[in-house]
Amino acid sequence: MIKMQIVIATENLHKLNELQAILPSSFPDGSSIIYTGMQSFSLTLPPETGTSLQENAQLKAVYVARQTGLPAISDDTGLEVDFLNGAPGIYTARYAGEHGNAQANNQKLLAALKDVPMPQRTARFRTVACLAYPNGKTVLFEGTAEGHIAQSYSGKNGFGYDPIFIVTATNKTFAQMSPEEKNALSHRARAFKKLAQYVKENPTF
Image (tube, rainbow, N blue to C red; front, side, top):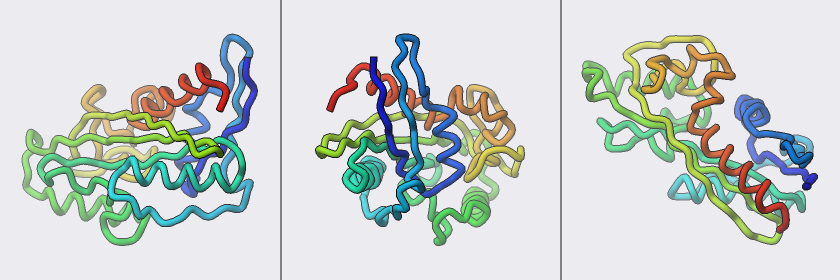
C-alpha cells in the first residue's frame, strides 16, 4: 500500500483540472496519491526548448521534481495533421505564434486546410507523459487519439483544438463531449492512465 504526493508540472489550468480528473487518486488496495498543482510551489516552468514531445515533457517534469523534491509529472502534446506532413507537431500550442492562443491556432489550421476534402484531413493527437523523480530518474508514456480536422467549429467544451478535432471513435469533436466522455478516450487520458498504473506498481524511487 502506498501513499504519496505527485506534483503536476503545468501552468495550464485547463490541463491541470483535466489531469486531476483523469488520474486515479486511490486504488482498491488502499493506496492513494495526492496530485498537487505546481502553483502551490509558486514555480514557473522553463521554456520548451526540446526538439520532440519527449524532450519537452521531460524538461518540465525534471525541473519541477528538482525544485520541489517530489515526483513530478508533465506532458507535451502534439497535433499531427497528415496533409501538413505532421504539423503543427511540437509547435501545437504556439502554431500561430503566441503560446496558448487557441483561437488563433484554430483559425490558422482551418485556413491551412481550406478546400481540403475530409478524407485528406486525417490527424491525431499524440501525448507523451513524463514521470520524473527527484533523483533524476524519468519514465515516459504515450497515448494517441485518431481523428480528422473539422471544417468548422463544433461544441463548447474542452480547450485548445477540441472544437475542430473530430475523434474517429465517436465521430464527435472533443468539444462536443462531456468531460467524462473525453477523459475516457483522449490521448492525454491514455498516456496518464499508463503512468498511474506504473506508479502503483513501482511505488519506490
